[in-house]
Image 1 (cartoon, rainbow, N blue to C red):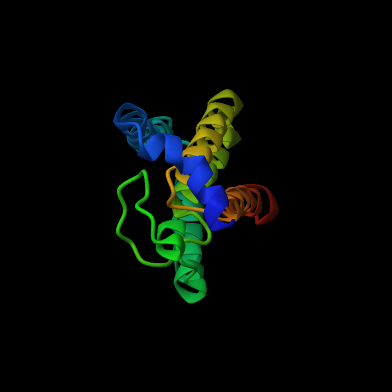
Image 2: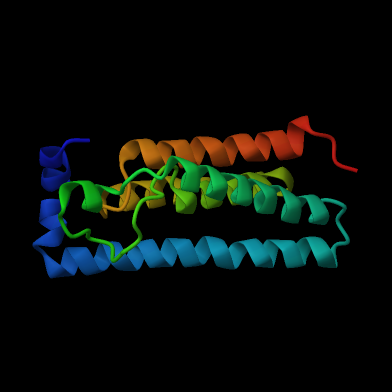
Length: 167
């Protein structure tokens, strides 16, 4: 992404406090929704004594660590760092932009839920798409960061639930 593209994409939000506040609330709300639903889902699996419980904890946890280590090694700067423009979403993190861990987390959780409840998993996936857009227009990620986060999240879920047998 070029500075001009970033500016044109975020200018309307940065100059309008109401729009900026709305984007910030939606970002927090979607993140909170997903991270509220995940432990609730784990509790449901526990109550039902579902054999998937251990896997539903292990797959997101292991893949989260892998993505975190990868991000630290790659250490891509964030758009607000590269272009020296304040982001719409409040963030002070330096580097570690690629891939988006927020988007990754939503998608690996969406696949986790999809295994037992496809409709809910698809709804979480839709929330992930909206969160990805918000993370880009909010200035904390570039499109490639959120696309990679989604791909890594979905791939981790497919590998963890469908390709690797779990005892």
